[in-house]
Image (cartoon, rainbow, N blue to C red):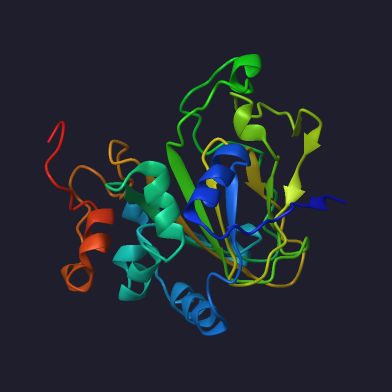
Length: 266
């Protein structure tokens, strides 16, 4: 039986930045209230996949489990604009990636019973290093990308929680088949509906099998330094913002969507 990941809540952006740097993640308890959770689940369940946007959808009858993985959620309903700059989370993103950071993706992800284990992985390893260097006290690798998970269900082992290998962002590498690092094995994120966790892209993690009877709902928001490209498919200038949704965005939300001031390489 896997152990649960110890989730410590911090009150200030400075403490949360330090958690991202040292622990690899920051925890936000009760980031959403019950009404917000219910509304998000309802809107996400009504999204229709767009194959050109690399959305992934299949039913339990087709592949043994329901999966509805929808990209560019911010462009599908005005509700999602508020999750670009959620209080607490956005201050962490700006402190980590800079005041001109932006969102590089937002994904609505619903998975049903029967969903299998993912492989332990890193989302992106920007700076591979020998382990003795990466873990050295003088080495501080910048945080290039963070992902915030908004959990919309009470997470149990049966529902298929996300797992982390604590401290693995300091390994300087991807797992490559390993399941522990420096004696640390996978720990499960067993949090409550409405909780959120932000983590850096180098953390070894995975989604685990849904062996229960319920469906898991998760909203992902990916942040990065402005110099890292946004992932809004379809590409080759075929992605188009919904002008009606964009008209409702605040100046900060517009910047997070790419409305930047002129800078280097513009």
